Length: 636
Image (cartoon, rainbow, N blue to C red; front, side, top):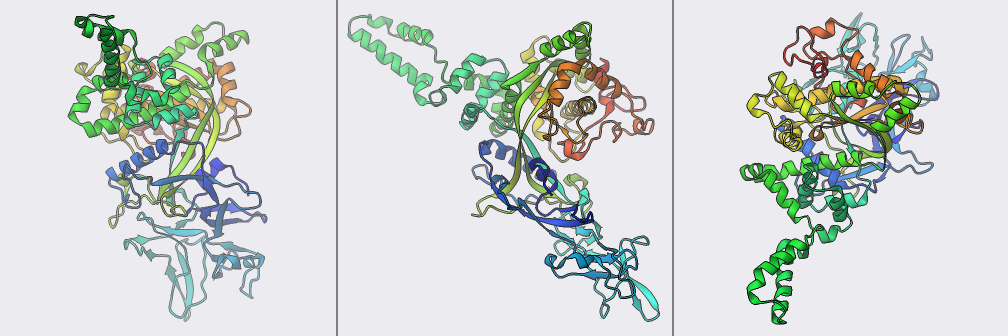
């Protein structure tokens, strides 16, 4: 059965059991063995690998076992691959598993030695007193938090070969005759790795395989990728741009002259030496008196500023965050790497090659007489804290899965006393130098929402999450941005678990943005005609931005999201604003402290990059009976 590459990254990964219907319409489970892959091209691996390593480290910091990975900073530990798509050659290889079968009519159990032995006669009962075509596969496996997994097998009872399985009575036992009585044989196994007691579970249950997948916005502009590879000086320059210390024109000048921008010849010391040589030559030629030497040097330097070099932006960044750099130089370097990584993705969205602005969307709705005045949109946008909206087109997303766990995704939710929750690595490359990362490119469009950082700070203060002493100058945009960089620690946000309560500011800011994102996706899904699992999100906390986009090819050619934003944005906002307040399961959902369930904010895991963690309608609206925050963001 053919599947899209994006589906493969989530649903058809090595060491995963899946259930699919074959030509006979009979559901059969199989274990994915490997991919027929090629190395993914036209991506910046260092850019992606750094984030993979950071996420794995976070898993380890939460108590997980990450021994399967090499996280050395100077080591190329991962190879990002995709399906080869060679005509006539399967891209994903699996085999039927488990090889235990039972007759749904008489209960007779049988097994096979290998997957190749499965044929059309497998589905006919071997019991001569039955002989019905009523055989089914026993689709159950054992899975352990240490990473071990095994298909179910017939229990071993000395001298017994004939068993019966009756799932209507119990799924966890088989039965055999002993004399005149029938005795049970339990499906219990001791994990050979950690000695944990294992009971079987449905083979294709999501509990048994938790893929760890990143969604990274690809830097399709080759200049940006080359620039980012220049390391920490490039990272500091990117940060300066966010803090309005570097104009777009000067940034373009740097991108067009990358080697010169990082050349020692263009640094101030070298430039000063060259100017001094020129001034001495003028003095020697009698064209300038010796006493004018210093003033002439300074004048020449001022009149010929070097806009190509990144040196002054590096100094500006260090000056902006001098305290952070002085207190913890190593932590400062790690922060720069992560912060600039997110800013590069934001810039790719913000300055996409093709965009539809909010003004254009408003004008189109006025022309179509869907709204009477722009205030219908701008007033509600302000109420919802949306500082800007735009449609960003021709965006390329890299979905890449770098590992998996079993049973649970967060080490802090582990219940196994015999082992730590393990993050399992995939096979190594053919030359054995790196672990495989299974990926897929997606060319898509989406809606970028930039939420007012100022209003978020005001909301935090209103709910006593921050004190008056912690407030920045709310009339100064740079001061607010710097406050976000100082207090919102996005490096503690992982893809698999909740944020620690000690990170109160980060926890509330992310929960607010995440809840808004799901409210937007619910509304956009209904109005654009896209199915529930066709939309997904990227949340950039650093810039308080939300990007929702179509993750399947279903809505891209039709322009489902861009069309909705152009012609129906006012109704989209109103729908999200009105419907996020209530839930059809109230008061049950309201009585839960997180105020989120599958009827309101919880969406399919394939659509959520954070396993539906940190969600709640309480962040958007005041809900009776819920602890702080008490004032909803959309009520301010």
